[in-house]
Image 1 (cartoon, rainbow, N blue to C red):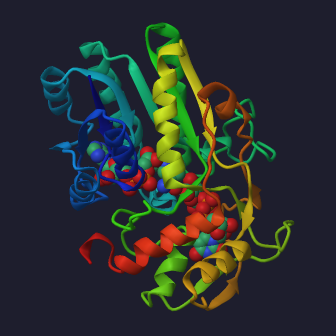
Image 2 (image 1 turned 60 degrees about the vertical axis):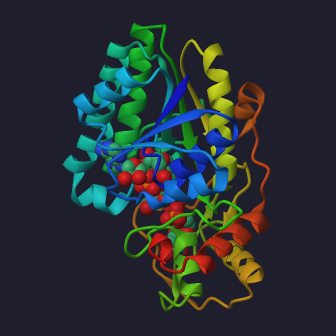
Length: 338
Ligand code: NAD
Ligand code: UD1
């Protein structure tokens, strides 16, 4: 039996492929390399001593999916492929709906045709929009998303629920990630954003290696512990292990289930900055800027359900997140091009 990982050359995908291989699974990756390089998978092979079958192709290409489903006995699909830049989704919504929503529809149709009924989908805490109060439980209202990226995740969750209702032989888990950070402890694979990073920790670590001059902190007047935004940062290897736990649970899932993958702990921007400085020994210059449009004051997960039903919880704390982020960035100042 083989696991098909769409978007497996990307940040979270490559770490999950590594965890799958270490567990003895056979893995096929389908990725169009629009936001990744195949070098990530070569390094995964180097770390595990196992090989990954790689298809350079697009989830919107039905013929390509058909070939994979015909060629391999796929038991489960882990679906990471999609676009994820919030600002870009506002300026180019059609591209986002095309990739994230239409692409997923094509994948689901091909799964249906091939009678592959087990799916894990990369959703996001962003589906809770501005309606929920912290800590977010899975039963909190979803909706009121503030950008096409968030709406695309919400739309796919709706499609998955409708499909599971119509065809109960499907077992589908949507994992709502909070804020993934960090890298594999080897420092060989990690996050390699295109251009100037939007997210906090990649920005801080690029200041540390001198690629960026200083961190801009988006507001220090929020009603939080020190005025800066609070988030639930989760180590990418904890996230990868969350996918393995979800995969083990899939046979028990009738229909559709959503789980939060977070730590349940919120850290402020200043706390993240200090923790990074401690791990790296580097002082990060910063300036406080106005709030960023669309940002929430605070967001963290209630992790009870994943603990109870998946038997999974995050085990890596902020010091490990910072150690591994720095280890990756220091060894690969230019990302995979280093
Ligand atoms: P990433 O960009 O590193 O990985 C996504 C991968 O999908 C890339 O390798 C890209 O080349 C590929 N891809 C994109 N469109 C494709 C298509 N049409 N066909 C085939 N491959 C395609 O992003 P990531 O951080 O690893 O995120 C993985 C998933 O998790 C995404 O769906 C993202 O929306 C979701 N997610 C990410 C975060 C985060 O902060 N990183 C948070 C919540 C949810
Ligand atoms: C952002 C996205 C969200 C996505 C998530 C993925 C927005 C509005 N939201 O969320 O949809 O799911 O990334 O991880 O883009 N910060 C700074 N300076 C920076 C960068 C960030 O002060 O240069 C602050 C932010 O204001 C926030 C915190 O750091 O308080 C975390 O920001 P970020 O890493 O962008 O994540 P989110 O805002 O949670």
